[in-house]
Image (cartoon, rainbow, N blue to C red):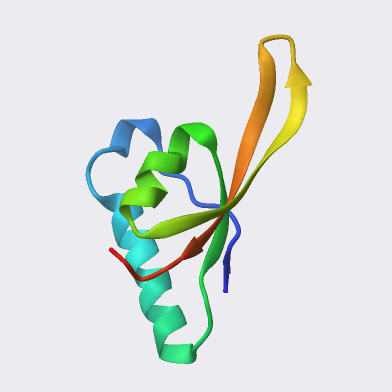
Length: 80
């Protein structure tokens, strides 16, 4: 299973909405078998790490003037 895009409006962040959406995806995956995979930017990594996702790979998308912009491949491990 792949979570393509997940975003919560900044006005509504910190209210548990993202956590509830990911929990619904986890339940759907558990009921139908398989693993749950997603990609995230570095700034979102702590959120997904806390939710039990394991980083499979971290890779640069482009070299910006301020340095590379990193993306992370994440897999739900079930540890959280």
